[in-house]
Image (cartoon, rainbow, N blue to C red; front, side):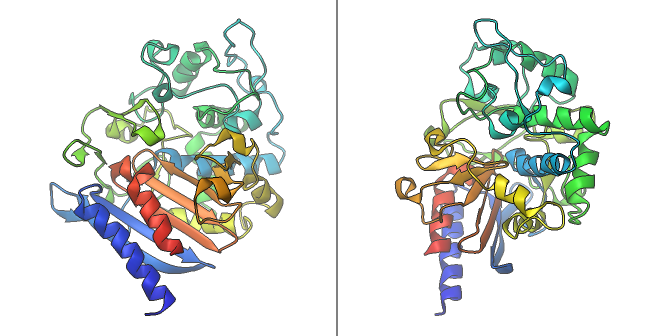
Length: 382
């Protein structure tokens, strides 16, 4: 058996085990090595109850897979001088002035928003009864019909977790970036992302709306007896490895045109579109970004002590950066860029090994941070 064949067999095994163990309902997995797709598979169900099989052009709600697209759009505007990374957010959003607990209102920069060092947080990371819950702040996955200004007003009232630049906390920062981009350009965020990134790359199925409902994957969530279909609004507890919180999901949010375009969680798209985008990043950014911009995106901006994906992981612009593989226990090379999405997704770019990997699933949170993610990674590296 060739190396390619043995790798494909290992990946098949990782997917088959997750399906057989009833940990995943369906998945689309793509692996590219040095620009050539070496593995492609759609497995399981697009809609389990209807018996509809998964298809490789399935459209998934992206959740945080939205972040690298919006980050790339922001970096393109930085290149053109429309915005600057060291600019205070109040230049564009004069009313967005959240305070630290002592009442002081420090400046927050675009860099801090993009790297999650602003002191903002996510409601799902905050304890019940916190300001985020009392204020009804949306994490971008719930509360259909919520307007951008309304959510920003609520967010600005919540105290910062720390003074900007003094820590790392995964946050609604990219949602605020989206509002900055709108204010700086006068265009809606969906148009900005389309004009700057998805349009030039011809990513026809990726955006803040669903292009073809017949291809939209039904979302499921981890349950005591296997994945349960997400209907209406349900709150799903994070697995222990991801934290103590719980994420509220309202899948219908993406159908409501009044819902603000969440830069951190509001997009949908296909595995093929995501792989195309990741390959652009891996190869230096052309035709949408300059090589020096991509180098900054893939360089750790916060320090590995942030442990953004565990020991050895820092954060760049758009994803976690592997600074030191030794304590992480991963076969990935230093410099790997990686992140995922709460609806059940995981992706990474390992430039040293020429790898771009996309795993979009319809199962939260197994497809984001469950055993499947580790099994798939290890199968790829062998």
